[in-house]
Image 1 (cartoon, rainbow, N blue to C red):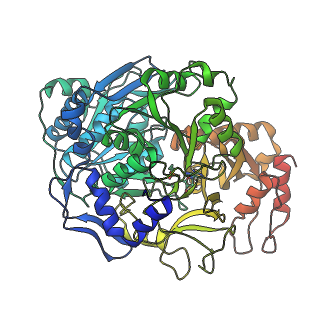
Image 2 (tube, rainbow, N blue to C red):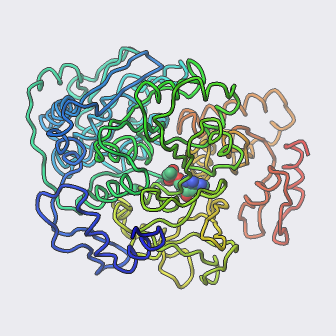
Image 3 (cartoon, rainbow, N blue to C red):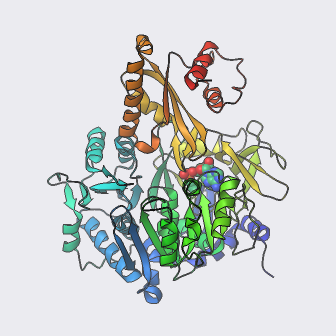
Length: 631
Ligand code: PRX
């Protein structure tokens, strides 16, 4: 008899090694592993010890015999009009060319390659080429600007940086070269080579001796045959930076074998994607969804993957469904904000195209509100599946796994706990487990399953202290999300416990935005909070105190400064982090010990009660916040 999700989950926890040894058969190994799990140094888990494998082999080479002439990569840009398909055999060739370019310029096993690219096929070639030769890729979201880029370059210390002349969003060209030069001007570390893909969207000056032209290099390596480098399962495949409580982003570090197994298992059990079919994730390669479910997951499963550069509403609000029809997409992955954007358009777009190939639409990255879930599920007549996870875990923690059991979805809940995760809801202070329908911190009892982060790049101590020491007396992994579970085992996500905000599914640290704003010479200090927004989930709202108190009496100057502050954030972090509003005040509400009362500010912004104010130093500061908000 088939297992239920609950039984499947129980087996994954009670017979952890047996369970994952079975899942490990979903991928190719060059040499078998000696040990399923080495947990001799908690909380560090090492999976499939001694086994050698390769992500690029499993994503590409493995399929050559059976799927060589079938589509692997489908590239569509509604920004440039480009549209092209590569078969597995063609993708294989392009990846080998890219790998040859890297090797020719000194990139080898364990070296870092920083990829700062728009949504173009070459970004996929670059990522897979790194995997092929054992170089560690670190992709930086193309919407980030110089300061974000510089911080990541200095932390990852890449030998090579791969980029392009420009990205394009909603018809607006974003030139990358000036951002790169500005970032490198701030960096202590300099890459030896900068490989530039010239899309002819923006003119730029190559730096002689350092910059390489991709088209020229590709020609030089057109016949390259670069064999896969077999890597021990626990070698590093990539780092991906993500925001937390401090201003310094963390390099989430992942392994090779555990990640490959986890993705293969998720494709089989959760996404139910089959070889020869097409997968379409609308995320960006700069985020974890892009890594796991634009690139590696679908390709490992032998599916074609669509890489889409464009928005959901250009040229019209039917574009996503038009692509579903054209490429017979069976599994789709998007974010609630994209669906809320579509919800503002005519719902007739949902039925204009034949989307009957689609089995499920998965949504993740931010809370999926019930009306949005219902609207899209009914409009498409398709199953909509919420799933909850993080950059740190690499694949879903909560959802339903319909290839295991047809658990009904409940709109408003991302679902039940998935196999591999020993999830506990804990009281923030006592560390005790909370009961059904009680709010607690979502935590995971280690060892974390395969595919989850190994550590923080270059900082094991930070990995332990950040993630495993936040709940008193319990060494558990904290997600920093509040949640509750009902009597039936369905979870509900109730917001972050830390200073991370989620704007249109983009995870941002308010401290990073505060640091950026504080770099404006007129600003003395500031506070940034996340405020509920009906379209984007949350937006950042900033309150800044000026050094010159007289400026407050000058409305023109205030207006100009608000604009300048937004421009500073645009330039240093990128438009994704730009606050929706900047309010200028003469003081921030603080406790007597000087801590800014961010929660109270946030509450006022959302027109809620500011909470316990017994520790406030100067109550009048709250009135200023109210005034600024026009309340
Ligand atoms: O707060 C949770 C929210 O997004 C955070 C993780 O963001 P990121 O690292 O960018 O990874 C996204 C991977 C899909 C979580 O800590 N989040 C993610 N998925 C959901 C969610 N909140 C509610 N519902 C979800 N399905």
